[in-house]
Image (cartoon, rainbow, N blue to C red; front, side, top):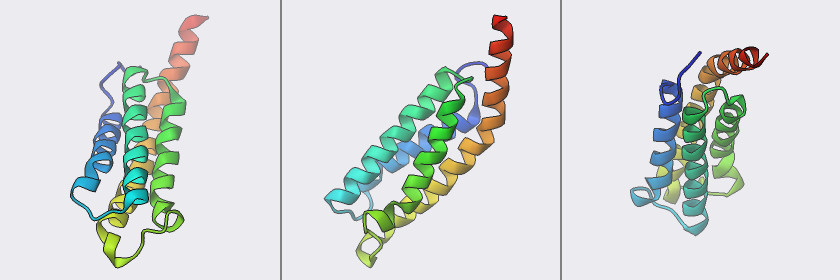
Length: 122
């Protein structure tokens, strides 16, 4: 059973979220691009903290993966794939893929912790 604040995958999710949240400082963006990166980065930070505080919260790992998928497709959906926004779309693609990977990597451990917690309640 995993203790709170110890799972490395969730710390990585927090760092990825912070990087995304702050990336408009160093990448060229427009208003819609900036807000996309800020909002999705903030959601990733918050779900990472949720996972760290409650290591048996399996739903938080799925949220990491969904946010990662949203980040990955955001350049096409929000339409920031042009050469002016190359840093922003690479940030979205790389962080998106990594968020899906760390969410999937933490899922078995979160599930085991969740099941162990449920077994202890009976």
